[in-house]
Length: 210
Image (tube, rainbow, N blue to C red):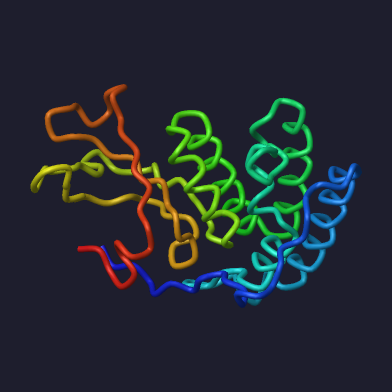
């Protein structure tokens, strides 16, 4: 399986991200999302091709602080899509972004879903580590869809594993730097309830995965 080169969404070290703390944050994020969607609709035709990605539109989502928004408030976010009082806002934002470009909306939805999983099931130390990645403009995703063979882990040493297999969809490939990849151990049936998930860093497959 060959992976496209990465196009990280990094700002220069000295730039500060906008605050997500104003009392009218819901109104502001929805307004910004609507503006981004309007622009994305104008750009959609130019990126609707094999290998295309709405990079400039996604950068605007990042600049607006939307990559951090799904984090808990104590982690610098607003709990977008994670805290119950923010679910309605998430649906409105996804509706707007999807109106502009469904591909853009799908990648952002995957980012939100990944942070939901992390904040629900990960250890606190892991949650805080990945929260730092979200603050550093790293996009997350969930790569779950697969054929019958799926992806499996094979032990290759103490606390080390080799991941083998393929996914049928990898939304945001080449831009998503923290994909949440579901897999299973060989002794576990592929479609069992004992599914595993691992976050893969860009260092693990910066050039390709075979």
